[in-house]
Length: 304
Image (cartoon, rainbow, N blue to C red; front, side):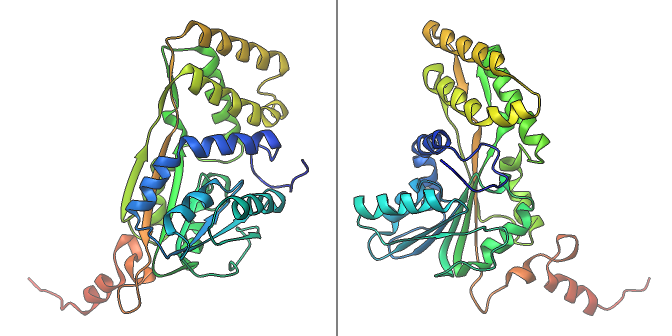
């Protein structure tokens, strides 16, 4: 598969998109729960940013029903159009797709939307806080921005299995060398505040502990996707990859190991409706609201 050049560390290959489809199934209930808490309901218009093979689009369409609509955007137009064809032929939802570089785009065709969503996207962007502001600008007044991101520091295996630990270390090294924040999930509330949106309206954490037969296979798939970049950076080689895979395969046969997948942290924020406190009024200098600052300036001085 030929794909666009971008900063996606995992590579845009057929194997990576298959991994993303499997990942979407793993986290489907966690994402559904976040969307329910954020207020997704029948009849709403939704935007899935970085939609990839369209699994979250399908989930959103199930939730908003035939009276609602789901638009997906992705830099990879080929995979997005393929997803659109599959969704339209297998479900009864209203879908649209636009090939878009969301970091440079000022608007999305068909916007604004009732719900604007991204999952494991901000970690791949140069300025996550700036993009959160953009997401809010694509949201209707009264609508909601919903984000899910991994905290990769929580990724672990017990009992300790050196092959899995090496995969985790390699992934973190590649991510950090690429300027990615591997704790972005944990830092999401702070990102919302730094973006000027104020604290999230809600936070959710999805966790998965699985036997090595599941978690180990997922770890191998991550390593397969990250391997070309890790090899390019001199962090591993083909012989090491085979050794790691053989060790995990052997441990799966033996049994007894469990993998804690990276925690998936979700946060959401509703855009104020007209006539109420706006985004720009909510957070001012040093975290104070502009109204507080105005009141402070009007307050008479007190002399002792």
